[in-house]
Length: 66
Image (spheres, rainbow, N blue to C red):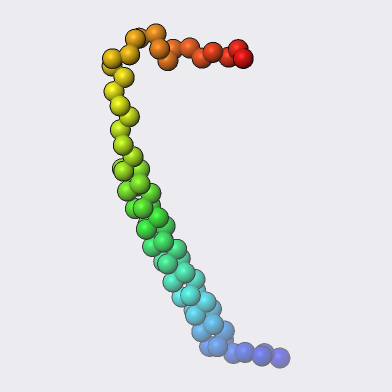
């Protein structure tokens, strides 16, 4: 006993596939927007000041005693 004919089943499969494709497309657009926002934040980070006037021995060791 067949409940649904093949035409209805094919229509439901196509509709589901179409909805999934739209969902993936929306997800891709959201990820692209987040990528652009992250890149703009990274580009907005100021450069650290130059340390050329510090002695060369600074920053070479870490004091591990308390």
